[in-house]
Image (tube, rainbow, N blue to C red):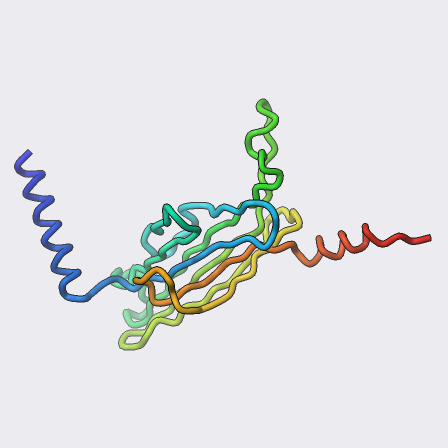
Length: 182
Protein backbone atom coordinates (compact mmCIF):
# COMPACT_ATOMS: atom_id res chain seq x y z
CA UNK A 1 0.00 0.00 0.00
CA UNK A 2 2.86 2.38 0.81
CA UNK A 3 4.40 1.64 -2.60
CA UNK A 4 1.16 2.63 -4.37
CA UNK A 5 0.84 5.78 -2.26
CA UNK A 6 4.47 6.69 -3.00
CA UNK A 7 3.95 6.12 -6.72
CA UNK A 8 0.80 8.28 -6.64
CA UNK A 9 2.78 10.98 -4.84
CA UNK A 10 5.55 10.92 -7.45
CA UNK A 11 3.01 11.08 -10.30
CA UNK A 12 1.23 13.94 -8.53
CA UNK A 13 4.51 15.85 -8.19
CA UNK A 14 5.29 15.25 -11.86
CA UNK A 15 1.85 16.55 -12.83
CA UNK A 16 2.30 19.61 -10.62
CA UNK A 17 5.73 20.30 -12.16
CA UNK A 18 4.23 20.12 -15.65
CA UNK A 19 1.43 22.51 -14.69
CA UNK A 20 3.83 24.87 -12.91
CA UNK A 21 6.16 24.98 -15.91
CA UNK A 22 3.28 26.21 -18.06
CA UNK A 23 3.85 23.31 -20.45
CA UNK A 24 0.15 22.46 -20.77
CA UNK A 25 -0.72 20.19 -23.68
CA UNK A 26 -2.03 21.70 -26.91
CA UNK A 27 -5.77 21.00 -27.05
CA UNK A 28 -8.61 21.54 -29.54
CA UNK A 29 -12.26 21.90 -28.58
CA UNK A 30 -14.76 20.00 -30.77
CA UNK A 31 -18.41 20.97 -30.28
CA UNK A 32 -21.26 19.08 -31.91
CA UNK A 33 -24.68 20.56 -32.59
CA UNK A 34 -27.93 19.81 -34.40
CA UNK A 35 -29.76 21.93 -36.95
CA UNK A 36 -32.52 19.29 -37.11
CA UNK A 37 -35.29 18.43 -34.65
CA UNK A 38 -33.78 15.10 -33.57
CA UNK A 39 -31.15 14.73 -30.85
CA UNK A 40 -27.56 14.11 -31.96
CA UNK A 41 -24.80 12.15 -30.23
CA UNK A 42 -21.13 11.55 -30.94
CA UNK A 43 -19.41 8.17 -31.17
CA UNK A 44 -16.57 7.71 -28.68
CA UNK A 45 -13.66 6.99 -28.66
CA UNK A 46 -13.56 7.40 -32.45
CA UNK A 47 -10.61 6.66 -34.71
CA UNK A 48 -7.44 8.07 -33.18
CA UNK A 49 -4.17 8.53 -35.01
CA UNK A 50 -1.47 10.09 -32.82
CA UNK A 51 -4.07 11.66 -30.48
CA UNK A 52 -4.80 10.98 -26.82
CA UNK A 53 -8.23 9.66 -25.80
CA UNK A 54 -10.70 12.57 -25.99
CA UNK A 55 -12.06 14.10 -22.81
CA UNK A 56 -15.85 14.46 -23.09
CA UNK A 57 -17.69 17.17 -21.21
CA UNK A 58 -20.30 16.09 -18.70
CA UNK A 59 -22.32 19.30 -19.00
CA UNK A 60 -22.11 20.24 -22.70
CA UNK A 61 -21.71 18.78 -26.18
CA UNK A 62 -17.93 19.23 -26.32
CA UNK A 63 -14.85 17.06 -26.63
CA UNK A 64 -11.33 18.16 -25.77
CA UNK A 65 -8.92 16.67 -28.30
CA UNK A 66 -5.21 16.42 -27.48
CA UNK A 67 -2.68 15.65 -30.20
CA UNK A 68 0.27 13.53 -29.01
CA UNK A 69 2.89 16.10 -29.98
CA UNK A 70 5.52 14.52 -27.71
CA UNK A 71 5.23 11.08 -29.33
CA UNK A 72 8.15 11.03 -31.79
CA UNK A 73 6.69 8.03 -33.65
CA UNK A 74 4.02 10.41 -35.01
CA UNK A 75 6.62 12.51 -36.82
CA UNK A 76 7.69 11.94 -40.40
CA UNK A 77 11.40 12.58 -40.96
CA UNK A 78 11.58 13.49 -37.23
CA UNK A 79 10.47 17.05 -38.07
CA UNK A 80 6.77 17.04 -39.05
CA UNK A 81 3.95 15.75 -36.82
CA UNK A 82 0.83 14.27 -38.45
CA UNK A 83 -2.21 13.26 -36.39
CA UNK A 84 -5.95 12.91 -36.74
CA UNK A 85 -9.07 12.20 -34.72
CA UNK A 86 -12.34 11.07 -36.37
CA UNK A 87 -15.77 10.69 -34.76
CA UNK A 88 -19.14 9.59 -36.10
CA UNK A 89 -22.32 11.53 -35.39
CA UNK A 90 -25.53 9.59 -34.68
CA UNK A 91 -29.03 11.04 -35.15
CA UNK A 92 -31.67 9.72 -32.72
CA UNK A 93 -34.52 9.73 -35.26
CA UNK A 94 -36.92 8.31 -34.17
CA UNK A 95 -36.07 8.95 -30.50
CA UNK A 96 -36.52 5.27 -29.61
CA UNK A 97 -34.15 3.89 -32.26
CA UNK A 98 -31.69 1.30 -30.92
CA UNK A 99 -34.30 0.21 -28.35
CA UNK A 100 -37.56 -0.49 -30.20
CA UNK A 101 -38.92 -3.02 -31.04
CA UNK A 102 -37.25 -4.91 -28.18
CA UNK A 103 -36.52 -8.17 -30.03
CA UNK A 104 -35.05 -6.62 -33.17
CA UNK A 105 -34.39 -2.90 -32.62
CA UNK A 106 -33.85 -0.65 -35.60
CA UNK A 107 -30.53 1.19 -35.58
CA UNK A 108 -30.19 4.96 -35.43
CA UNK A 109 -29.09 6.70 -38.64
CA UNK A 110 -25.61 8.14 -38.99
CA UNK A 111 -25.08 11.68 -40.23
CA UNK A 112 -21.47 11.01 -41.19
CA UNK A 113 -18.06 11.65 -39.66
CA UNK A 114 -16.09 14.68 -38.55
CA UNK A 115 -12.27 14.61 -38.65
CA UNK A 116 -9.76 16.93 -37.00
CA UNK A 117 -6.27 16.75 -38.53
CA UNK A 118 -3.15 18.37 -37.12
CA UNK A 119 0.17 18.98 -38.89
CA UNK A 120 3.05 20.58 -37.00
CA UNK A 121 6.58 21.25 -38.14
CA UNK A 122 9.25 21.66 -35.47
CA UNK A 123 9.52 25.28 -34.37
CA UNK A 124 6.20 26.31 -35.98
CA UNK A 125 2.59 26.54 -34.78
CA UNK A 126 0.30 23.57 -35.50
CA UNK A 127 -1.97 23.72 -38.57
CA UNK A 128 -5.41 22.31 -37.71
CA UNK A 129 -8.06 21.36 -40.26
CA UNK A 130 -11.62 20.10 -39.91
CA UNK A 131 -13.25 17.94 -42.57
CA UNK A 132 -16.37 15.80 -42.88
CA UNK A 133 -17.34 12.67 -44.77
CA UNK A 134 -20.78 11.23 -45.55
CA UNK A 135 -22.36 8.26 -43.80
CA UNK A 136 -21.81 4.82 -45.34
CA UNK A 137 -25.59 4.38 -45.58
CA UNK A 138 -27.22 7.74 -46.42
CA UNK A 139 -30.16 8.53 -44.14
CA UNK A 140 -31.00 12.11 -45.09
CA UNK A 141 -28.47 13.82 -42.81
CA UNK A 142 -25.00 15.24 -43.30
CA UNK A 143 -22.34 16.98 -41.20
CA UNK A 144 -20.95 20.49 -41.72
CA UNK A 145 -17.81 21.67 -39.95
CA UNK A 146 -17.18 25.32 -39.10
CA UNK A 147 -14.17 26.95 -37.53
CA UNK A 148 -11.63 27.55 -36.30
CA UNK A 149 -12.97 30.04 -33.81
CA UNK A 150 -12.02 31.09 -30.30
CA UNK A 151 -12.46 28.28 -27.79
CA UNK A 152 -14.87 28.90 -24.93
CA UNK A 153 -13.63 26.21 -22.53
CA UNK A 154 -10.76 28.31 -21.15
CA UNK A 155 -7.97 25.87 -22.05
CA UNK A 156 -8.11 24.94 -25.75
CA UNK A 157 -6.25 26.75 -28.51
CA UNK A 158 -9.26 26.78 -30.87
CA UNK A 159 -12.74 25.42 -31.41
CA UNK A 160 -14.49 23.66 -34.29
CA UNK A 161 -18.23 22.96 -34.51
CA UNK A 162 -19.69 19.92 -36.28
CA UNK A 163 -23.37 20.54 -37.08
CA UNK A 164 -25.80 17.88 -38.28
CA UNK A 165 -28.09 19.20 -41.04
CA UNK A 166 -30.60 17.72 -43.44
CA UNK A 167 -28.64 16.64 -46.50
CA UNK A 168 -29.24 18.44 -49.79
CA UNK A 169 -30.76 15.29 -51.36
CA UNK A 170 -33.27 14.96 -48.49
CA UNK A 171 -34.20 18.66 -48.75
CA UNK A 172 -34.85 18.28 -52.50
CA UNK A 173 -36.92 15.15 -51.86
CA UNK A 174 -39.08 16.96 -49.27
CA UNK A 175 -39.57 19.87 -51.69
CA UNK A 176 -40.59 17.45 -54.46
CA UNK A 177 -43.03 15.67 -52.12
CA UNK A 178 -44.71 18.96 -51.22
CA UNK A 179 -45.20 19.99 -54.86
CA UNK A 180 -48.57 19.08 -56.32
CA UNK A 181 -48.48 18.26 -60.02
CA UNK A 182 -51.88 18.33 -61.80
